[in-house]
Structures are given as structure tokens and as C-alpha cells.
Image 1 (cartoon, helix red, strand yellow):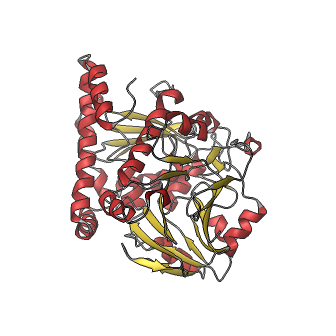
Image 2 (cartoon, helix red, strand yellow):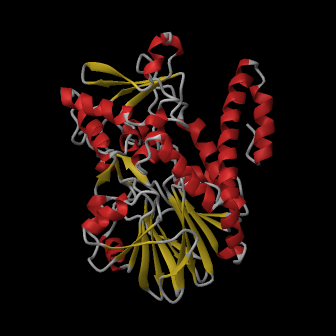
Length: 466
């Protein structure tokens, strides 16, 4: 085998040329993340860890801890070179430089040669994620990891078309649960659909993306995790497993490749590394990591929590208040002070029930979605949704980019518009259309015409009609 790759779990993929390890992506190698909520679906073997450590290059897509896993950095070798996307903020680069790593930022849409037969092209985006294209010989792997396309569909598709379709692969997230979905009502009862209703749409959407890019194979990668802390294990049935992908895949012309495999890019054949697709449930614990739900916040911590959210100016047009219940105490933080005169029923707010330790750790880190994604904190919505105006603003803009004020937001948007004007407009039009679709779905339900409209819409998308 001259060229090949191996999926290690979650978003880690290792590429070889002539048997020599060249590149590994997003190395989460050991332990847990999201405050002890996620464990690796299958912990790495010693051979897999040695493969990572022998790779000349390490690429890190973005700052989420299952991709930029700080404890795993200690397992890397001093001479390994770390490649980063050209993100808006240099925080990740600065952190790694302080740790004395050799770091290189890869320019947007520029090929970089890593070995005689392997080169890569990085597409960072306004979601503060990134996509990596890996050319290995005459094969191409599109590593989407967790990233949305963010207006890059046309560009990627044009590159994919230069290759024999049988030699093109897409590696991407397939998960219902890699975001906050622990939504509850006022009595604390979960208000989400059961797993069997949520899973098909996720797989259908993934199949549509693979089809739109024109790839020949889909590789199960990103988000191979298991919930291991006691207050998060309820979410395990919502994970999309290999059997779910097989059951709901809608594009038979595109081959689906299971997780944890070695792929020979010369022949297109692959071998599975485990006899069964089962998770290592021995990692599940009765503990809640460093959290004790009975511990209250100190007065200075309440002040820090309030300062964190009130400093995000760009949140004010969309959210009136945030409410936090920690131990037995509940406090409301006004984001939009002018809303105090509104009737309670008209206020736009979000109520969180969270443990003190990880709540304040997330605030200190600045990445509030680190506690959202853990799915042990509960969230109650009042006249508002987490998307598009809470999680992206708090996590992607304020957290990952340091963008809190309107002037900085304008500079942020100009940067991404100037690089790819057509893609930027296409992406934001798609986001706007998604909002319109949500409104249409709401009124269709009220007018009792949801079923026929759903049939029409699914036929348009090419999804199964149920």
C-alpha cells in the first residue's frame, strides 16, 4: 500500500505514504472532554497512539476540546509540526507557541506539500471551524470533521471533479448529540423527540452533503464518543451509530465506510480494526467529574458570570435575559436592560440549570458551548431558540473569535465576505431560508397542512417520504 489512511475515532484520521506516517488530524488521544462528559467510543490502542506520535504533521481544525484536546498535547513529540487554519483569532496558535510547539498557519485555499505524494488544502470559515482537503496520490479525502460548508460547496465540488469519483472520500460528523439538546420545560421534563425520530434526518442530511460534493465514499468520522458521566448518560441512545447510518442512508451510489478502519487508497479496499461496532461502556461512571451539583456560586462568581454575558453587546438585540440556577439559588442576568418593562410572557430568555464548577470553568475559558455540548446542564427556552442568535454568538463569535462589540462584528463579517463573496452570500441566504422554513413549519402545523408540505419538501430534497 503506497497511500492509505486510518480512522482512529472521533475526528482523528492518520495518513501514510509508503508506510510512513505523514499526517494526523484532530488528535484526541486519551481521557475525557467537555468536563468529563465525553469519552472516546473506543480508547486508542498502543499501536494507534504510536502512529499518531510518529506522524510528521498534526492538523487541528478548531478549538472544541474533542479536536483541540489539551491533555493529548502532552503525548505528542517535540519535533512534530502542528498545522492550524487561518482563524480570525490567534488564541490557539499563541497557546501552542507558549507550549513550544512548532506551529504553522495554513493560508486559506492554498495547497501545502507535506510529502512527495501528500498535500493538503485548508478552508477555515466564519463558524470558526475548518475543512481539510487531503490529496494522497491520485485520491482525495474531504475532511469536514464537524464543520458546516459555510459557502465552500461549489469550490470543493470543483476540486472533487478533478479526480476519479471512486477515489474520492468525505469524512464527516454524523451525530444528533454534538450540541446542546438537553431541553426541558418549566417542570424540568425533557421536550425533545425520541432518538428514532431524530436520527434519520441527521443521516439524510449527511447523505445530501456527500451527494452535493460528488464524492464516491462517505467515511464515518468525527464524534465517535460515548457519554460517561452519570448526569449525561441519558444522551447515549441519541448517538448515531454505524447501524443507524446503514439503515437510513439515502444515496446508494455513494459507498459508506464504517468507523475504525484502515483504507488502502491504491485499491479502495478497507479492513475493519474491530470485530464489532460496539462502544466501550466500561468507561461509564457514577461520578460527575469535578462537579458537585449542591455547591453554590460565591458572590464574586455570580458577578463574573454576569460580566461575561453582559459584555457581549451583539447578543442584546436577540436575548432579553439569561437565568441561572446553581444549587438552590436562581438569578436573572439582564442582557437587554430595556426589556425590563416588557410583560413576562413576551420576554425572550433562556434558563440554565448548571453545576458551579464547570459553569465557571466555561466562563473562564470563554467557550460556553463546552458546557452546552456536555448535555448534563439543562436548558429551558422562552420565546427564543439557541440558534441562530445564542450559541453562535456566545460560542463562535465572543468565545472563539473574541468578537463582542458591533464594530468588531462588522470587521469579522467583512473579512469572510471579501475572501469568498459568492459563497458568503449563498451561505447566509441558506441560513435565512432555514429560518423561513422554521416559521413555515410552525404555521403549517397550526393550519394542519404540515403533512402534505413535508411530503413535497422531502421529495424536493430527495429524502424518504414517511
